[in-house]
Image (cartoon, rainbow, N blue to C red; front, top):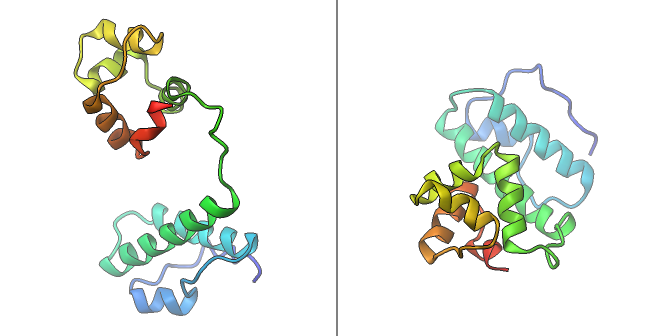
Length: 141
C-alpha cells in the first residue's frame, strides 16, 4: 500500500466515508503504519471533529499503538523510574517546581524527588501516570 500523502484533500466527515477512504484494519507493515499515522495527523490538525471522525481517530490510534508496541517497542529494562520522570519533565518543558505543583507538595520537594532524596507516594504515581499518560509502574523501577 503506497503512502497516501493526501494532506490537502478535505477529510470525510462521517465514519463510513472515512472507512471508505481508508478501512481501519490491523497494521501489518511500515507502509500501512505510515499511512495510518498520516491520517491521524490529518485528523488531529482538522480542529473540531465530528463524532464519526472522533471514533475513526480513536480506532486508528489503537491500531497504531498495537503496531508500535509489537514492532517499535522501546527497551526500558535499564531505565530507572527517576530517569523516566526526568525525561518526561524535560520533554514537557517542566521544572522541579512544576513537578512539585503537579504533585501538590512543597516547592522544595520537586527537587528532592529528582535528586532521589525523597520517594514518590502511590498518590504521586497516580498523578504522574495521569499527567504523562503512562503506566504508574514506569516510575517504580
